[in-house]
Every structure is written in structure tokens, then in C-alpha cells.
Length: 282
Image 1 (tube, rainbow, N blue to C red):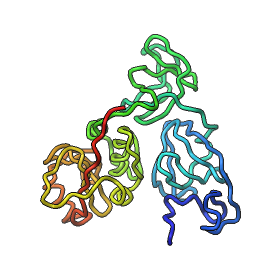
Image 2 (cartoon, rainbow, N blue to C red):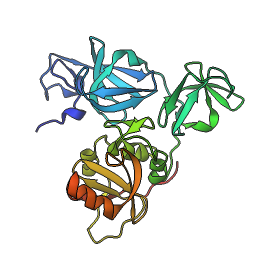
Image 3 (cartoon, rainbow, N blue to C red):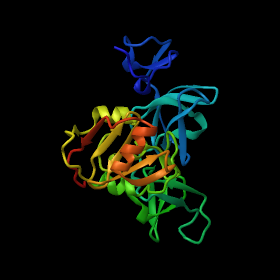
Image 4 (cartoon, rainbow, N blue to C red):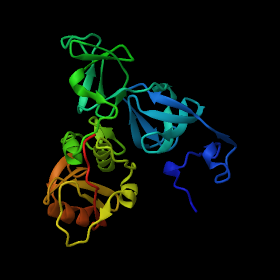
């Protein structure tokens, strides 16, 4: 059986101990859990290679090897493997809250009139160390408006509502934030916020999410529509919400128009439509 390199923590030199006997490597290691310490960082397929995904502030990465400024390993979020700039990582801390606004600012003081140092994005994870004047102090010493945070175990119940938070976000191959996002990154962010495990890429999502619908079944909010290399989520029985290179943004589009355009110019015919399980708020 050929292992998918996207989710196989091995690069030939080093591999995770769980793969001993399954892959060839010079060393098998347990690795060390690290945490992203900047707003976002690219995961690339090789050192200085192409972006295949991203991680956000506070997300964890199992580093198996560090060499010439890059760490090879695996993202905790979805098991995606690749290379990250070592300087973007620090020792892992236990998060208490996550960012639920499309973006938020890190203020040096608990005062909205102070100049914020940097922004964090939806899905970022932080450790709250104190609260004052409707601000939460986090592990860096910065302050975030309390309205923009929820406890790490809190979840939503409507993936489409979450995807709508990204409306107008620029399209970015491999992106996963309000700064830039791609089609499967949008679906992953929406589903993860509702407590549903979701792999990174559209082919992985099509193979593992929900149940296939027959062609004659009426569509409903939350159904996923797949093409070979593309995915979108239905806002209702007519409108598709998706990050796409045609609009170069997250946009609504009538499904019939998307099917005609994509079929003629991009990814061919729809390969499947899948319905997710009913979700409830936690």
C-alpha cells in the first residue's frame, strides 16, 4: 500500500516512531510538540518550497527534525506534513481560548485607543492569563477584546454561518485565514469550528466527509459539492459559497452557474455531493 505523503510523517531521513517497519528512514523519533508563535506560517512541501497549507497562532506542530532553519513534522489539526520555518515555532503551551472573530488585534494595553501590535485570525488559539476591562490578557502579554474569544471546547452548529465570516476574503492557494484562504481551507475552517474533524484537501474531504447524495435529492444548507480539485458548501438549495480563483475571493454563486462555468473552464463535472451529519452546539 502506498502511503499518502501529505499525512505520512516521514521524509526519508526521519520518520515518526509509529511508522517503524512501514517506511524507510535513517531515524525514527517521537518528535517534540511545538506551537506557532506568529499570526500564521506556511507549511511547504520542501524547505523553501511551495505552500501547501498554513498554521495559525497557537496551533501545534509535531517537529521531527530541524535543519537549516526549517522544521519537518506534522500539524496537530489535520495530520498534514511538511516544513515550517523553525523561527515561527516555540515551546507548546496549553490553550484556553480560541479566536472566533474573523480577525482580532493584539493590543499592548487594555485600551482600544492604543496602537495594536499585530492581528490574529479566526481559529487561532491563545492562553488567557487574566481579564480586565473586557479585555483578555494572553501569554504574550498582549490584550484581546474578550468578545473575540471563546473557550477552547466551545463550538458552533452552522458551518455555513462560519464560512460566511470569510466572505470577500482573498483567494490564496493553501491559505486558511481571513488574510487568504482556498476552497478546502474554507470548508475545513467551517467544519472544525462546529466540532467536525475535517482533512485539509478537497479529495481527502470528499473521501471522508458525510454521505453521498443521489443526483435527484434536493439540496439543503450545509451540503458539500465536490469537483476534482474543488469544493464548496451550499448556503441553501440554490446558492453555493466557495473560495475560488474565478472571483479570487470567497463568494456566493448560484450553483447552476458554478456548475456550468467550472465544467467548461476548470475542473470538469461535479464528482459528488455529500451531506454532513446534523450538528449541535456544545
